[in-house]
Amino acid sequence: MSRDSIRLRNLLLRLSKGYLALEKAMMSECCKLNASSAYILEALGRLGTTTPGELAEELGLAPSTVTRQLDAVAAEGLIERSSKETDRRVQQLSLTSAGRQMLSTLQTGSQEVTERLIRRIPGGATPRVFDALSLLVRAVAEELGTELEGSIVDEKTVRDKVKEKYSRLATSAGGCCCQSQPAECTSKGPISSDLYSEEEAEALPTEALNISLGCGNPTALARLKEGEHVLDLGCGGGIDVLLAARKVGPSGRVIGLDMTDEMLDLARSNAKKAGLSNVEFKKGLMESIPLADNSVDVIISNCVINLSTDKKQVLNEAFRVLRPGGRFNVSDVVHSGDMPQALRENLDLWAGCVAGSLSAEEYVELLKEAGFTDVAVIPTRVYGADAVSCCSEHLLPLSPEDIKALDGKFFAAFIEARKPE
Ligand SMILES: C[S@@+](CC[C@H](N)C(=O)[O-])C[C@H]1O[C@@H](n2cnc3c(N)ncnc32)[C@H](O)[C@@H]1O
Image (tube, rainbow, N blue to C red; front, side):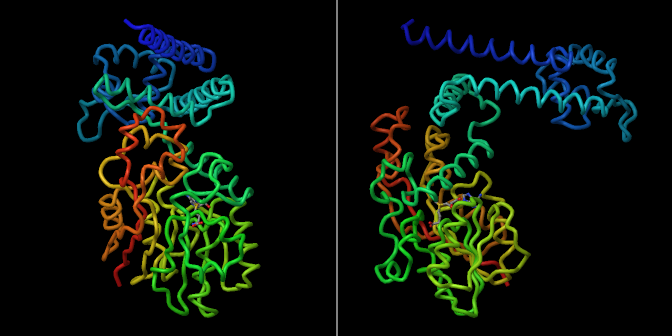
């Protein structure tokens, strides 16, 4: 065995033993529970009302072992047993209110233990720590030939990372979509450079152009008409809101939606500088758009939907707020083929508009599922591997050949679809 493999094996062993011991200590400290009882409560919390057989299957244990443990938690008043209405011979299990209360204490305790661990990591839980751990988890899962539950790319972690990045960029005003540190990119990089014509640029406040972080020019392709009501998902510093507002004129209206206060402040200040009054900016999430059903004619967006961990929900929401016959006219990063898992789980690349991208086929499928028709994904710019290696220090697990294979894999596209009349 090489030195590296011995070190890795010892680390993995200590890590798994250590975490289990910590959890055990936490359970007996917070809830006076043994681990088996806690696993039963957690499984019942997940399954809801269930039978002993289903519970045994969920836990991967023999039914006789589960029956003994069930007796113990029932004696504590944490679960109740009843008969199934449709078949009185079948026993049903569910949590009592004391059981639910205990489960919630357990979950809070678990979170506290994890947060204590994070505080012990020098420098905190940086994306590199998550990247390294996620690769380790993936390697173990591959060896086991199974998927390990839970992903490091969970909704909260990704949203916090995206928020942190775009709030920071709004206050440092400048950058490109794929950028780990503001100082690293002197120009806008391969994704966000040269998106707008000279004529468009001249009509915009410099501050709006400087904070342009898109990957396309949706208003140039959206065929906007006078009087239309437009919604821009993830408007950032407002560049496309301003361009759209000129196209729809004083009888039209453009709403910019963004989740970060810093971007919204910038967008409002840019709209003021541009002297536009037919615009409005709202704080909110594109996963739950704060607008009424059937209230806008066109949805635009520029390099934002890829940032969501719940794109199905975003597209359902887009469909809901569009009026019948309304248009979905969005620029976004898309990829072809499969995405290497090491990229998918890289938080910097997710916030950099690459790792969260859908494949063109997935985009079409999700739009159709939401109810859209006339769906098309039209490539507008194909990226070289440099669009990804802008964050190269985080790509260490990929070999130079892997990185080269990314050439042409990611592209910007104009995505159009229509809500049926
Ligand atoms: C890559 S920037 C693009 C900004 C702008 N569209 C442009 O072209 O310059 C992404 C923007 O989307 C916002 N954003 C990201 N996720 C969001 C979400 N789930 N809901 C609303 N806004 C979001 C960010 O705050 C950021 O301003």
